[in-house]
Length: 172
Image (cartoon, rainbow, N blue to C red; front, side):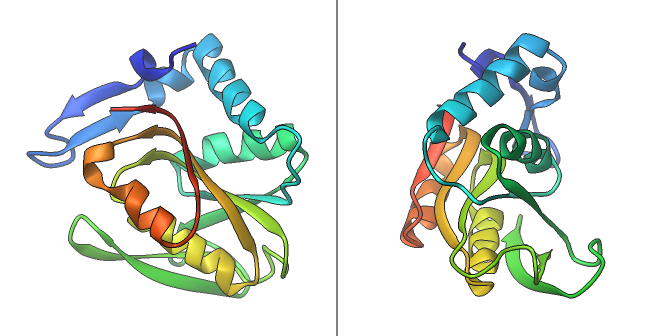
């Protein structure tokens, strides 16, 4: 199933000149949601994946479900101050404003194979920060997976520069 028609584009949101890729339209369609998860799971079938790390909030929806399908653990990567226990954090640029994300220090063990999941790959800033957090804890990021990619935003190049392959179900 082509999931692209199920992702609504909202021009000039959250500010003029931006286009927001709204996945809530995909989430509410049970066939599209299932097909998306099936396609993500099929891509990783037969590979040893220990953990799925996903970036807040939209990445959580797909990351947790994918972790379940793959028999992997799930690692939430959240905005600063949202996780209990000891954490590590990383700053990244979000629309020209410094933003920090964090994960718990015991979320990934040294040597574990990890896939970083997010909904849309645009600038790649948050995904790159997530990759660096996983690596800081000794995890081995084997791939970054997305529902959609915005090639003109150059996020793929930023992520691949870190030595991490990129997989996206569709592109805009």
